[in-house]
Each structure stands twice: as C-alpha cells, then as structure tokens.
Length: 272
Image: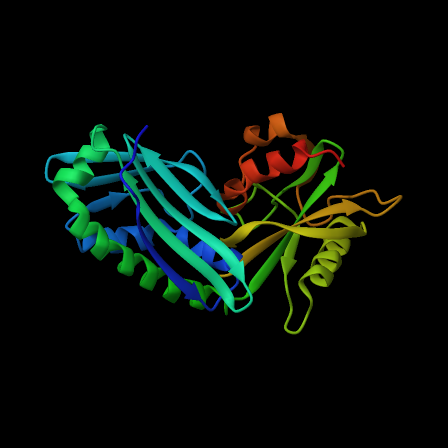
C-alpha cells in the first residue's frame, strides 16, 4: 500500500526508554491529544496491547485502528490505510521518541485523515502527543516499582494464581513483588521469588516495556530461570503451573501481565 510521506515529530525525554514506551501505550494520552482536533477516541483502559481496537470518531466518520505492535520499542496502530506510530530509541541522556502519522488517501481511513482531519491538524497533533508523553514518562519514572519474574523452563513459563485480595483472587500473574527503597531490582526479584515460591532463581534480562498498574505503580518484568535443584511451591499463591506458549491465552491474566503475553511467546520461541 502506497502512503504519503509520514508527518513526524521528535523529542528527547528524560526518562528510561521502557518507561517512555509505557507512557505512549496509554490510550488516554492519544485521547487527550485528538480531542483538541474535535475527534473522540474510545479504547480499553490501561495500556494498549497487540490486537486492541482504537476507534476515532468525528462527525459521521468512524475510524477503527488495531494495535499491530506494543512493546519496549513503542506502539504501532494501523487500519484502512493509516499508520500511527510512536517509536522509542534509548539514548545516553534519556530516550528519543518519534511520533509519525502516515496515510494512503485511497484507503477509507486514509481518506478520512486526508479530507476531514488534514495535514495541518496532524501537525497540531504531533506536538500535543510529544508534550503529553514527556509529562507522563517523567511522572512514571518516579513511581514505586514492582518486579515480576517470567521464569522459563524450556518451552514453558511459570504462572501463579492470585489468592488475594478478593477482587483479584483466581487471576494469574508472573510472581514477584515490590522493590524496597535502595534495593536493586534484580536482587528484589530474587528475594520475592524466594519468599513466594521457596525457590532461588537466576534473574536475567528485562522483558517488555514498563507496565502501569491501577495504583500508579510500575511493574517491570525480567526473564529468569530456576537455580539448579530448585522446586517452586505455591506459598502465597492459590496455585502455580507451567504454561506453554499455546496455553498462555487460556488463563485469566491480570491486566498488566496480559499486555506482555505476545512478548513472552516470542521469548519462548528463542532457543536457549
């Protein structure tokens, strides 16, 4: 599909790249920006995940965009000849964020942008998106941190079923807990797994973007493996189980953990 040259806006943001990626995945940021153009946006609350629907409305027009990508590199929405992307590149002094809007006037949605929204309005939209992303990312960069372990064993990962509080009981998550003041994140995760699973883990690389929790805290996930001879036990959870990539979608995950399931599937596909 042939697109007109994308309109772009770029800003250097004083926050970690994965935190910036979390900010641009929050639909309220886009909703706030397009409202200045008289466009209404509807999407599920929380962060956007692959496959989520974003609907834009103005007058009689209705535009449906799907989230094609959402990870630590940013977010991509596509539909009907329109591409809206937020790309995050880590740097020495923060992260470089680039928003880009491109469209094909021959497509239904692209025609909407071309005729109804217009180039001038898109150029107004980009600074609003960048300004909102900067404010939100800098706010999230100071939020309390929770860490979670994607504990891998071959082609499976360990899922833990919540026992409390009542509103979350029965749903699934990756085990972990809060990082205490002055505590290293990897050390905190090893400690939490020892407390929750009575098992030592070897904590590896970060996985995915920061995940914003309902209480405003930030969840950061790490790949991990059981230490030799370790056998996890459900101490604080109702149950634990090893889950393959094909089985991940069968569980009722907490909202934040659900966002990274496509990234976990990719990780499981890599030979170790």
